[in-house]
Image (tube, rainbow, N blue to C red; front, side, top):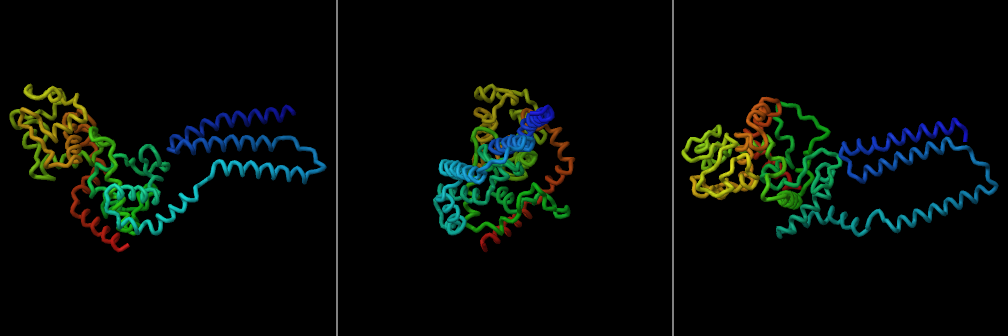
Length: 370
């Protein structure tokens, strides 16, 4: 091997050594699954070997070249056949079942009444429509890193999930241009889903919850959740539930015995249990939830479990925490967010709930005709 060839090989080896970790890191940052990252790494190695072959010295012409080609073909065929038998690319039974679900299976979903089977059918529909391409669920999927993770989507209201599915651009007012964004959720599901699929997908999404004792993922700092919690706290959503009547709109109590919500160090009544004596800044997620749902024994704090859903209780907790900054977002950060364009759009969106519900009802009517 000449010195020139040796230097050339070393140069290409250095490039490959640099490219290999670079491709791995970049694909990781872009959110590609581990299988794809290994595949990209293999590509780098194959390309390196290919360029080595280009610099290899020419082989002498063989007298029996045809026989060599035939033997190479036979050996390759045997190797690929063994690999194909040992590691089949797909199971024909599984593929036939997918085809059945896409045809007669879609119609059968409308007949399902058992709640458990309906959820299972919803998971099938989720997979058939390849929602996993954009959404990560239980640590899997979301290769395109476009949509939010759905592990805790079941805590959202049925209306919110319906709107996110059928009218995903609803939060942008009509006066704004609504281009087909690269990362936008498709808005054609009212045309694609039939009534059975829609019912099943809704049942499946509502079933997705990580834990009953922890704040749903991301809710401590999600402005929409916090603002919805504020509306409940202020008695706007449900006049029979008005936290501000005792704790004050700004968290400064206006009733004797009510806890100061804006003071993270304020302790509860000495008459109550140990967990409620702790200052707010030491409360766990479960402490927040139980205090609102069950009330605080030996105090005037009532339990609101009969008047509020568990989801609404978490929303109230998310807002209450901002008053003292004990968890999640502070009042200062919330106010600063509301001054941004995104914040103004969100505020406008929340005020148009009646219009939004009418739109969702209209889109559901289209599904009934599919």
